[in-house]
Length: 485
Image (cartoon, rainbow, N blue to C red; front, side, top):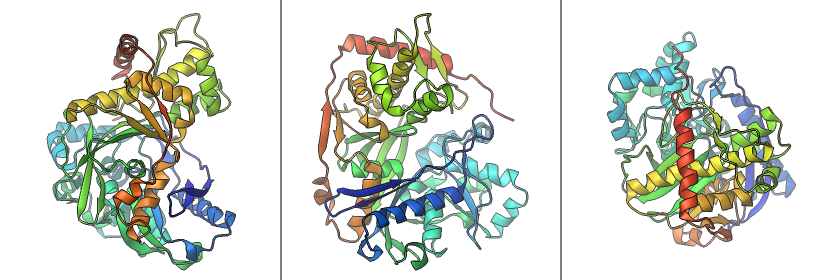
């Protein structure tokens, strides 16, 4: 959980981070305790305010960006969750997805929601909870239960239980939101037997949707910006014109391309999603998601113990000229776009007696870059345009070796902004726009500043040869396990 305070120029003044525990009850299952999310987020916000001796009445507005598909059900009467949150990476609802596919819903889901049928999204996570917690379906049908992604859960508690809302960008990641009429889709809800009464009200991404309760932060502050983390990062990167693209490297990695006010239908495994809505203007994007990026570095540290910190991966990877033909496929939770294989699993291939720590670490960084090329190739095919430059953000962009690998693997420049925390910045900009801190998108665009641009230094033949090896490795990892019954 993270809180940041920005000034009127879009400059970060202070930041507070609090790590909370992830839970892995079974292979492929990932959970968070919603109380941990709430407590850590409120504590980080209070620390930010305390560190600057800032009075809460000097804060113009609050913006929220969140992990999008993570699913929480809670009791409307007291706000207590009925279970742990099922995190976006979780694959437990694979069987429900297969049932939907077998029932012939694949094309309808795609045309109505812009998504593919996959456990990634909230819909089948909700169905799994309603199936497995005794009496929960009946309680939901009686109107006693509320559903939300993390933004909704936080807003419920920030407003003292008065607001149950989400914005269009988060709604568009549930797999039952119709991106054509911008409303919940009753046919999909009926097929999944999800009561519409549990769903939040849908709001624009920029606009005052509620006030914090005075007991929470000591003052009533407008909540004026809400967006899913990747849409917020795209806004923070000032990708306001059609064709502009950004890649975020976090736990997973995510590429979004602004496609303007018209949804572009993908034929290459990408998602069509809502980027944001400001006033009556809705902006759409194409998105590709790779489930594992920074999480692979955490795996090197926490599970293999071959690095002590993420920072040292750059020096270790740079100590060898190549991986020596080693490829790492980080399909710990299946493969996302453009493959969409929930039954794929991670693989380390091409090992020889000469393979050492440095080759494996470099292969992990290369995997992050290869996944970005997968997404960029699909995106360019769908839109028919080349990506001239890729704006990047997220925790991993401080790694110069990775950024150079990315430029080499893509064959186009990679631009890193001065403010790398563009997800938080995007939430702040959306909130500030709503309360008059910035007048329009043109004024916000002036806040974006370049830190460093990485130019490709590898020949096309070398680049393409490495990529062919990656695609061969991906194929080896696919359809590795059978779905749970």
